[in-house]
Length: 415
Ligand SMILES: *Cc1c(COP(=O)(O)O)cnc(C)c1O
Image: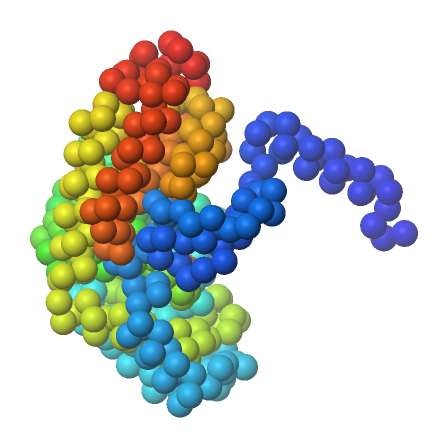
């Protein structure tokens, strides 16, 4: 018997272990479009309730924008449902190349290559551009997809302490014997919402003859004056060698990703990156939608400006109410609770109050760093945030965490 009783028992025990550790992930079913207000089914299966969504990566509120949906319909009508091919066989339409050109202009790079997702872009890029003569030096908090991509590459792997420029410089000096050095970082770190100091990273790269890789998935579309990303924010447009990003967050929220940067590096990906060569092309309907997204955000900064105003307002509401939040300016605003069970209890109570947020705890964040991650959107109106803060205050009062600092919360709940 291929799937033996012994095997079944082992998997049952393993899954029970995940449940017992409080790490079992449940999915909630949304019965509406993705938006600021969504209809969500209760775990009991009761009739879906309307809740305010504070946990989507829908930064610019474009996931269900009528013009994006209309453009996607046009793409469907004129370029069909699917290509039934990878890009290099017969999966490249005019609109795929057009989107790559528009992304290149938007990101301020030399060329761009679409991937089925940013996970795939990260899985393929390192192996395509580096070999055993080289070294990859990554921030210790980079996204899981970068960790996986680095594992697939034959270059030596090293890390530097999170955003620690002194440590990065030590590593650059240590690896001067290597042919190429590639510094690897997220632009915006998804758990804390902090920005990598790209101005300092680029300066170190130029001083020690290294290349720079930035995954700007949580930044593309809204960070920087015109939303181009972390490199625009830090004034280093055109000086990042490789950018990867996703179309699955601010840029419409559907799916798809890209590698963008130096023309030769992008061309190496076109020739060698395995997820590009061996996985299906991004569907025409998504390409058409993404073209509309770029058109909308290039024509006006209204959405990113509204997101910025919402972010400033929400950070002030939380701070005034006495919550312990991670400081910063990004639209990821973590409310720190430190204890995993507390984070789950607070999230559950907020859901009952009509606010959809999720508790994050080990292994998604470090032990003792449990939190609720709130995320703002240009789709939020002031009334959404006013209702949300009322619920946060009610639940925060119940657990007696308002006005309490880290030590006080840990003294009460442990980590
Ligand atoms: C979300 C995210 C990804 C994955 O993007 P997909 O296009 O959904 O695969 C990769 N890197 C970072 C930093 C992300 O935040």
